[in-house]
Image (cartoon, helix red, strand yellow):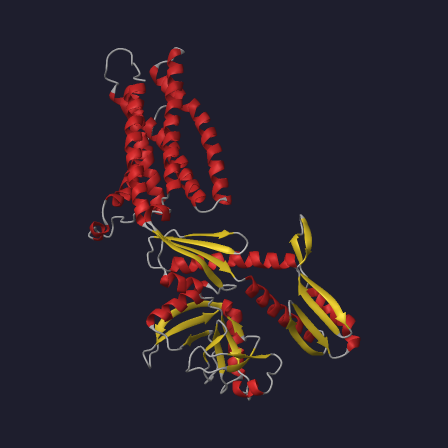
Length: 538
């Protein structure tokens, strides 16, 4: 029946009121909004790169770095497995694109091969079938075994590294307060970064480009870097350069005590004694246990803090650090400490990213697009309003009010969820308005059919809304499914279109069915005192 309880009326009107309040800040400047009371919403709809201008960076991942890191991991894993199997080795090192293991006793070859073959992992999904292995373990001679990554394994490793890099870059850019960056994969080893509203890319490049791979290493107890360069670096150790003149080269164990991925917090701070900028950090439970045990066993000895394969600090352990928290100092400025804290907090990049394309998109194109969009919107809006009112009279006015509510709620939801409006998004907004008009047309034409069938005015209105809703829901759900698929599989502008279209579908159903029906309900109540049969203005 065409009835609305009081609480339903209040809920509908309250939703419309909140929508208008949320949209209101978009009509005022930032300076005006700063003077508003804090309890009034001041968030504005953000514009995308094509409307607002901004920075455009194309980054390429160093695939050789991915391969090198994987070989380092395979080497450390091979050492650990052979040590656990109590098999002696005379050397484990990297030669070319493989890890070479030389056994102390040639007769241990079969046992060593069995232990090392456990490193092999199948590629693909076990449910749908595997597609080979990630590494190839073969006996390359008497007492020698080679561990070689396969091409398929390297492709999968690179793909995983790109996915991890995208998330790391996204966390770093979001930490700067930039809204709606567009960060997507391009090709097999490239990442496209678009940041609306950013004109100076220097800080962004420094923030994104740095790998920020942090690790804590044991320092060789007796051998200095100068001595190691003239003699020989012991097995398992490596010479790491100092980040600046205050920290010279150090001979460190290659396998770190704790890795940076075991950090949970990293925040800029100031040393209470020297007032110098530092970074406070905290480990997770596993990292805290390893770090606490190492510092407990090595009191009075130095340990090195390494960032991107450079020693930034090599302090002496004064006392055990058992709380899983510490601080990093190293001639930081306030800006560099803040930037490094963001990088450490967001996680290390799996490999170095190189900028292969950089450009700034000026806002002039965006302004032209906005102005053209405004003009097209005004012309289209006037034409839609005129045609709707001419076709359906008073009910056409109700449909126009519903369209206004639909547009307001669409922009309000996009503002609340922080979605940026792009040129494809404007297309989605216009399509949503067209679908809302189409819904009202379906309802009104159904009402006309019911009137021609001899039903009373109220019965015709009720039947028109009830029966047309099935058709509306079917068409809208089909479009919603397409929008969700575009958001799932698409990227960049396609996602912007999908988001706007999805929001528009939800608000069009509410506006075309609920709001317009409430307006007709109020109109019917106002017509109760009139004499004679009720004639529908539709």
